[in-house]
Image (cartoon, rainbow, N blue to C red; front, side, top):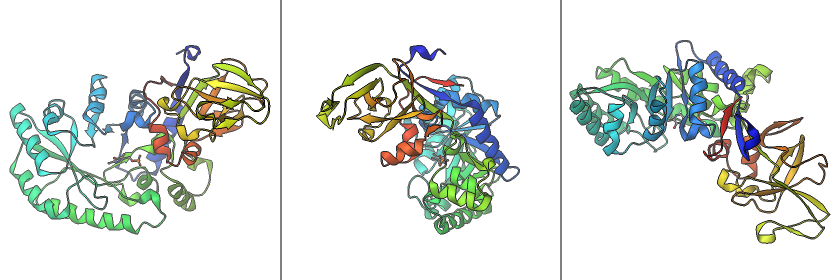
Length: 384
Ligand SMILES: *Cc1c(COP(=O)(O)O)cnc(C)c1O
């Protein structure tokens, strides 16, 4: 793809992606499967671009949030197991069964619908039972489990493909006692499931943080989300990891995404003039302004107004005034070599400088997950 035509684009580094997958495979307990979580447009990286690279790395299971995401993958002829983690409305379970998607099951109502549809279509619905162990989010509680299993036992139209749960706070702390309680509760439920005669299902619990620092949670499969993209779940996870494994280069994840734009206009402003909406910024010297064709509707957060910076010729150019819907102004006075349509880095490396998703997350009061997943889907993604 010729980036000359684009006002903004995303580069996805295949070598970085492959390195991250290899890194996790080397950490995994032998016999464990690595599945990748590519919901939210592959955490903003592009669902199809990531699926393509994961396919080359022989990943066998793609986890998505919605039926719509599952359909994008099947419409593009991926032959992997597609596992839907998020809620599907009862009226659409028909499609889940038709397409042979695997899907979360967390209450009697959706179990009944899976059963009904599978019977009608003369096939088996494939469910993963989600056990609630401490998030009070999605999942079935211990006290409802016995009754649920009895109902599941009665039907041959529904196949129990997996049993899983999700950690509440592994990435938020270096104290893993709450996670341990979740594991204890999960194992109690597993014992009940096994005692009822269910077998042949996959057991899985670990997302990126647990995959990195808690090998005993790997069970049959890990669900690798954020860290396949080269980002740590949190500073705490990173610190826990390096305190056990050291700082060596082999322990560093490689960020996969770079986000770039270009200088669309260069404009001198006299000392005392104002920049952008709301006149929140008055320049205190004669200033050269670079106008960038990027704004909050593209996912460049409005909280970066007067706070963020971009890279031009390997130097930092601070954001001047408010980020608008489609335009952002930066100060290029100290980068005299900057020319019209020069490349600008919003996230990524240029020269000696790097802007990480974590840097923008810190400036906008959020986490790297949100920073990357909110980059608008209309921006072209390309694998480099
Ligand atoms: C999003 C998600 C994951 C991936 O979590 P990361 O922290 O990004 O690795 C795993 N499991 C479930 C159920 C999820 O919703």
